[in-house]
Length: 427
Image (tube, rainbow, N blue to C red; front, side, top):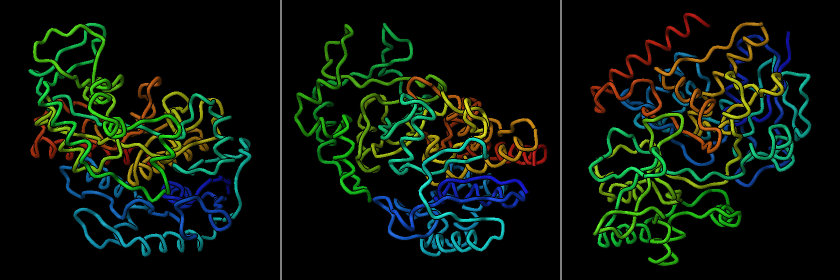
């Protein structure tokens, strides 16, 4: 029986253990929390749900709903237990103690899993190893990972800008930059700017379970849009400006939208990284004339979040290009969120198994939500890599269907057909 090491018993680590165990591997699971907890861990249970009890919508018109259904078809351990421990189905909410206890008891009782309660700090590439330590790896392991992938490919914090679906933008309000054909400007007059400023400074802020997280992020040189706005209107206006010559008599400030380098359906709102709660972000974004009726695929966020530049250092199967015996899964790869972390773990486990059996790599295509997510983080812009959640904007040919429930139903039907074909051909 071949041995595989898994580092970390969080969401993705628990999922990948289950997937390997059912494929008849012996798993050594390293988990340090019983002797050394990070700042948000409060117990010794596996698959801690530190930030939320929600696994988002089950609706088939939601990308996350389709992702869950794809994961059910792929026999996801995390989704199976989430369904078992659910207290509501729309959105899918779980009893976190019931959820965590089931996962912990199942894995601890498995005869082919050995739990090693110690800090893993020396990465041994002679043994197939999957690193699944999540966004808060131990400082010692952070240093090891940074040495492994290179300092420029390791990030301690993220500052994700909101992402808008291109086809839902009102282009009558936009002007293309004369210097960059992927940069667009939306001009604000003084009244529009004043309204935006008021919304920002009066918005509610998300308070993280990680103590002093906002101060920690800011102390490392990252600034949210609300932090700038709190300093005054002048400072916010300076942020929302451009050096380009603008031909507009009513121009007072400018919102910049940057097209994603990998996926032309996605536009980021430049400088809008934030800790503002989602309902308030939604109101702020919809106050921008070009975005009044837009679809927001991803909201802004800033937090302590270890992740690597997967597009630069990982191969198509989540293995390290320089050391193919080492794999990464979960939020460390930039798959951001419970669902997304688990999804990457499933695809990684499939490919670890194929690697050890000398079979070719296998990742679902971009017509599926899980495939489009994995392919995005593995192939996105290497120069400006940011973590990504599952969303419809990632899937293939999204622009060919109307962006309404009827169109999304067509996309979901296609995605589920494609994942079933993937299973037939590869599992």
